[in-house]
Length: 91
Image 1 (cartoon, rainbow, N blue to C red):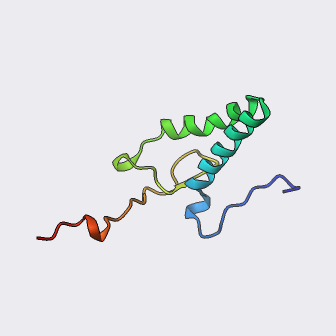
Image 2: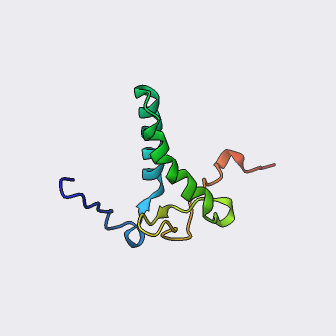
């Protein structure tokens, strides 16, 4: 990114980023702080956690997309695991 301009996947919801990207950055920067002994990396990435904690979570779940410019959900849809066939009771 020599020009400093970030781009999102065209199929992502309204120019939003996939929530997993934020989680990955968070884990990597916290780990980098641990390895380097420099807390600045973890401090910078904690802003992600602050934004996520501040947002409403529909039905208690995080939606799939977050707009990096507005800090708001890109959509209200969230993924939840489907019940496995073995979890349904059959008599």
